[in-house]
Length: 233
Length: 169
Image (tube, rainbow over all chains, first blue to last red; front, top):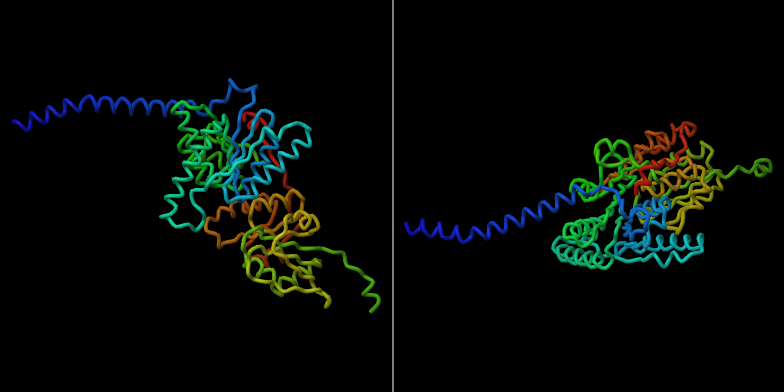
């Protein structure tokens, strides 16, 4: 009897907390689903204006592809531009700097002032042990968060290096919380013909990329929400 | 003797590049006697190897005995000039070297490094080989590829942009 009473009592007292919890979870879930549903809609309202753009560079051909893609886009629309590369990667920012400089030479304008270059910690270097990589991953995520709070870009352009993943996840969370509504454009590397890269697969499956582009028709067939953009290299 | 000295053979260079990788299997494959003999028989006069981080050192040759001239280096800030002056390029499967070579309209053999852990690189080389923009080989099949290849069968590569897709960006 007593036990039964106690059970009833505790159920009654915890009921409001459960109710609140369920409500909160439902609200968050609805918000996440709403964001996922809203993703992929083009930037109607900002179309004529320039948008602050975060460009993620990476080694192994990624940077060459990204700079090549940028050369095809209207640069005045994607202004200001923030270039980001891994702290251990010296070449990528140098190449981006060269490209921005040639832009200034071409237009004679002050384009370089609208470009910024920054480095980001990587969560794991090749050959690093798993125990230390837990610590470095936390540092890398905190650093990515700090950069994203500072820049709050309207557009993120990335094409597959591992460094783009935390940035895209943070951009998605910003949308959920309502800090900043941004669009993530993901262009899978031309080296991916039959299978997506790990970054690409995760962003595709989690609906985190607003526009997802591939450079081979057979990949588009496999991933129907992707757009075939042609071979850009 | 004077007759043969006056006759200057046009320089036709085969340029081998491994990029920033370590790809000893490729350097070894081009450093064999039969491979060099085959190149010479096909009218190539020079073999220049960019060997990257590899530890295998190929044998140099000045070609005084009427054979292939062989030289090598580890890195260079830009291989654009090497590619431009080459008659045939043999490259690792990195997308940078592949497209730089194709853009210069040079005949290309891509050799896939099978020792790499994440070997997604072979996808690109095989797809472009299927579209006849290049030949795709492995270190152990490179000699066979050189011996049987027909450069006339290669088609030029062009960038393909779906403009309306790109403009939606």
